[in-house]
Amino acid sequence: MNAQVPIDVGAMTTEALIDYIVSRFHTGHREQLPELIRMSRRVEHVHAGHARCPSGLADELEAHLQEMESHMLKEEQVLFPMLMRGMHAPANGPISVMMFEHTQHLDAVERINQITHDLILPEDACNTWRGLYEGLGAYARELTQHIHIENDVLFARASQAVKGAQNA
Image (tube, rainbow, N blue to C red; front, side, top):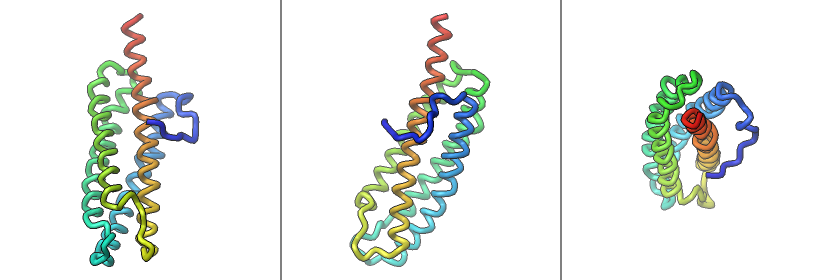
């Protein structure tokens, strides 16, 4: 996964990186998803008869929000405190679970893309529909960036620490 990251997250301490992830991505997702669900419900209701209406999108987003909330809470309450305390080896199990769930989150984005025809708007789309697809695109980019930082920086750092301790 090669997501563009605007700052040098690799240079951050583990604590600073975790703070960045929580404040930038966890908080952002918690703000974005309910609004996307609201907009989606509106578009599905108003445009139910339209051939390109993203039917089922709000339900997919609701399920995704529940998965994301559960995932983020596990990170915030279990995994991140372990990593901040330097408990890298015991964190291997939770890291594996989080990486598996990251794959599931990206699968949800694929389902969203299928429902929305890859976020391609019909010519007669209203402003809410346009805002919804713009928001979904931004959300998908941020989620991809979030997963990249966790998998390829934070979790890779913990894995390196375990390997270093084993070789010492």
